Image 1 (spheres, helix red, strand yellow):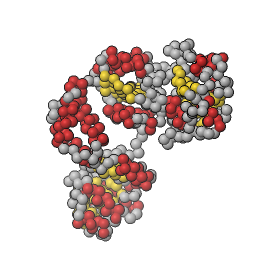
Image 2 (tube, rainbow, N blue to C red):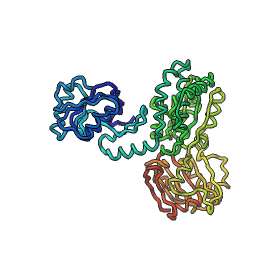
Image 3 (spheres, rainbow, N blue to C red):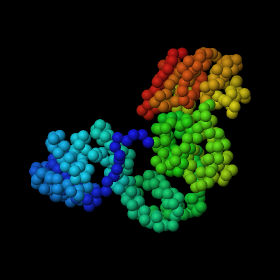
Length: 481
């Protein structure tokens, strides 16, 4: 996990005493928030704002009591937290010292240097609550993020969150195993997301329990899901891929998978690097198969996370066969393959109807690492084809030599792309005649894809421009052809 500027926590305040000093509108907002969380709020001030007067008369939940005087040290004893609306740094420092001497965590409104904790922007679907913090750096930005999340979370989610609170005891006493209870909550979540404004009732609980019990022994069995991580940009993950990552017990991932993709995984999932980094040191495929099957046999929900699409040069066939031989349930979630991501970031149509009548995917090396001996050179030399060559670093010079020998025009546009769709993507543009030399000089790092074909001429002429996928910015190297 990366560094956290703040630890996000959700503090239970129901029935607890909280001290607030100051009677300004800013203090009133914090008092309203604290009362809504069930706290009994005691306000110390000599000047009560109209907003605070309204809260005293009609608090959202916990009682609000006002003391028309300054807060003293003894007033803080036994408080769960202390909130200060202070006029200057001197008053803020004094209040913070007093609270800390009493062992009470303190927040001074709009004065982060005196705060032990911060209030973030809140999305309220209680008991589903989302908190957003920018560590005080950009509150307006935090509010904008809150607005986006508000739009994404239907109001009806609060109904389902309350139902989960009520049903939890029934699910626990239902006789389901741990795996069965987990499956219940997965089915519950899927139904809630699909029907956010449905009012859940006891008939829904009975039906969901029946659905899980109807799975029989299958609910305690392990499984394997092959998931396509896409070419790198985590925003290109499919919704099914995200759901699989969030329900996994173990994730076996390749070096080609960007680490940002793993941020979507369930925090509790065990994440295991199993190599497959091209020509460098890596696990043998047989070792991966054995590990994957063994974990599934022990009841684990295993996600085999692969760069791009599992079914395109991802050895998915061998892993599916291993699972089926072992009697392990296996399914596949496709991903965006590198050629698609590269075309999108270049702004080039690989199947432009005036320049290409077909697209072909070709592996750059055989099992022994050499150029495959059975490539269809007539197809590769076809001027109306767009060819995407995967993993071509070592063999591209020989592939170029053979393609030229079979008649492919040496001026055919070629683009080599490294780390397609990632923030550090690089593009090397040239022709078939000079690309091997350009690649030798530039030495592209990471996953590399080479595209060959007349459709790429749009990039050379400027009819297409490289652009970001999501919020990424890319680097272009040697763009002149």
